[in-house]
Length: 228
Image 1 (tube, rainbow, N blue to C red):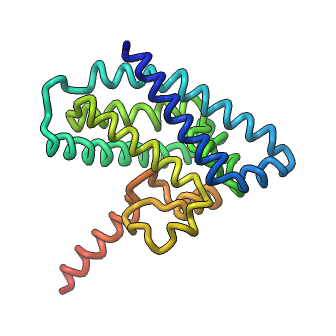
Image 2 (image 1 turned 30 degrees about the vertical axis):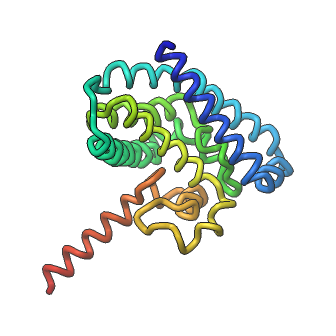
């Protein structure tokens, strides 16, 4: 199987997972969304953007990443685990920078469509973004993450799968109450990301590590140690 076909299969699996979140976990939110004025049209546009991004851009990014960024030498399980963690850190950091920049006046044009999903956020909106945003903020961090972490194929796919799953989780309001109180403070919860969709000026971190909160905690710890 060629890498492009593998990438297409990976994208199909991601879409199937999205549909489970969309019409299973978030069924009531979908119904509420579609009852709003213009809701059916926007929902269809979001689904269309998600499918196009995954089916067209996804396989290309998959091919480029595995072909040019992944090592072909064998890695031990512990090495693969380190690669996954480093990949996730790099991906989250790059996404944060791209996301923050897309909230500037000069670059908001590529992020505007995603924020049409504000009062009611759906799992399908996780990848309902412009092609420019999907390429720059979603796929490019995968490319750099796999290269920077010296991933092999297995660790790169594991990390990419984790990112995909968490991106759906933070765009699923129905999970917010279920996870409230049990979500690790250093991770971006659905509530954190929903606040970003409503306010636009906070919680730029996504989809896993809450970088603002982690950095703030480190700063407080350093200041406390200096004062102590």
